[in-house]
Length: 414
Ligand SMILES: [Ca+2]
Image 1 (cartoon, rainbow, N blue to C red):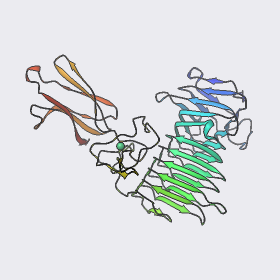
Image 2 (image 1 turned 30 degrees about the vertical axis):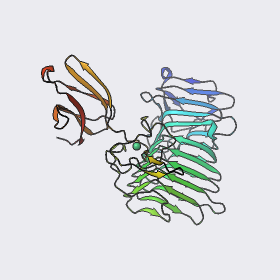
Image 3 (image 1 turned 90 degrees about the vertical axis):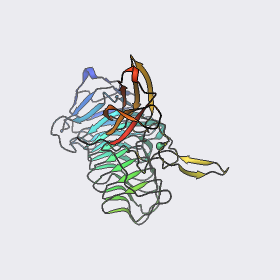
Image 4 (image 1 turned 45 degrees about the vertical axis):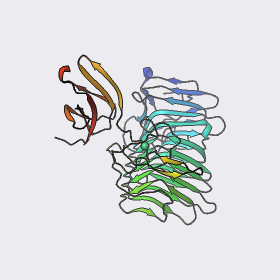
């Protein structure tokens, strides 16, 4: 890659992989488009020795950058060789008046800052389904305001880091997990942060660490988050912050302390979350139907939010008009999808029932003639998280009047 100016370039899977051996710049006006399946391999040495870090390569975006992969064909940024942390500097987005950054289904690894958002503006920034892994900092955010949706930040040193004057980030429906140090660090003066419906799990330090400024306070709002199995759940450091407001959260099982120097406000619980290995909620999780609906209409996996789980008693509140408003949104990045039938069809003499499944739960088709006693109709299926089908293969002469899909419980290795 000898053309360091990205303006006007379109990177496609046909030209992939793209080898980057020097700093790349996107200047205004100009657009850089990267399509599905593109792999970008970044050298450990900046041959131009340019930019703010002359030892490492940065991709600096000052204009219109559109990076859109698909779930099946993400865009991948990774180290060419020398596959160690901090191999390259990362994607540097310098916001302001002109620069527009939209990114979806992008994976970034081995950078100092996977994405460095410097003065982003919410109306110019669209980040959804971006994965940052094995970076020093997954996402660094200084100054400005922007919403980050469905970021998956794991195996970084720190998942999300902000420490600057006037920084207003919002993290929504993100997975922040298995980072070596803190999951989220939010600091700085005169800033405000919204962390909503995130699942923050098994970080080596705190799930969320708020650091106070010295002169003007910062407001940090934490709502609808699952913060479990870190060393600390939520900790507040520093002498003057901060209005740290914690509502509708489950902060549980953090090995040193769930809270340090801070207490939750309303509607928080501390209970075993019943998480699947991929951090979805198992049936019976106390995180189900715990919060008033989020602003989002689909969850981390793209399934509907909010969905009422019929098996969970409704909590809620009585409004000014005396009406009971049930809270049906689940907390965390995933909405639990209760078992529901998608379709029923005849295939010859057989009945095929298609239903949504949860990963690692077991399902079977059951039949009955009286709706009272039910008989299992093998086989038992292990849920995949996707739609699945079961067939009643009993001959039509003896076919039962009623069919149902039953959840047997969690899959166990035979
Ligand atoms: Ca729900």
